Amino acid sequence: MSQTDTDFTPTARTRVKRSHQRGHYDRETVYGILDAGLMCHVGYVIEGQPYVTPTAYWREGDKVYWHGSSASKMLRHLENGPRVCFTVALMDGLVLARSGFHTSVNYRSVIAMGVAEVIGGEAEKRASLEAMMERIVPGRWATLRPVTKQEIKATTVVSLKLEEVVAKVRSGPAIDDAEDMDLDVWAGVVPTATLVGVPEDNPDLKAGVTRPPNLAKIRIG
Image 1 (tube, helix red, strand yellow):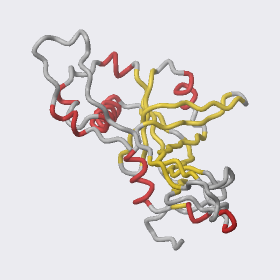
Image 2: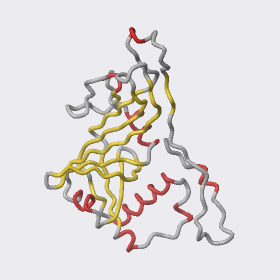
Image 3: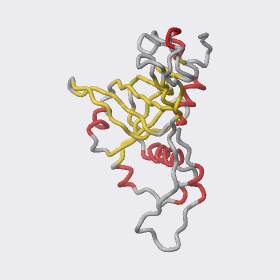
Image 4: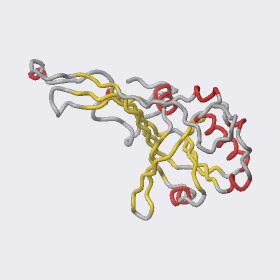
């Protein structure tokens, strides 16, 4: 795969060696996967013990962001500027081959590594939280009760600049051994997807409050 000025440069940690054709370093592929997802896993080490924390994220330009309670063990650790491993994976199908060995899954994934940065300024933090809400439901932030200073103080927002990054993608049918092609075994792909269901009203919803039309703008997967 040829590199362009807009691609991420593979490193010893991100270069895909096995099934190298699945590795992608172009921003279009990486950003497309990140913008299709909503949940990530952040890996880090505290006192020699590895941890992986699932959390919601969003992307702005060449950075990804996540947030949580200022009392969070993970977020307090990230204030020291440790290296982290940020991952997103989307499953697109079960790939059922004629043998267990070649059975697989179709997927899209991104792995990014680097030093996480805690967002300190109140205005920047507020803007980041607005971006998060707009990622979840476009147009919702303006309809909400304004965030308070105490809520801003109780929330930590973290960013990771996308520099050391790789996307991996597997798509298409099962690839069986030639000698297995005549077996009386079904082979194919069972598509999978993350679905946005019908909204469910909160049981304590005030009478007369209707579902906003922007719920239809939610996109995941």
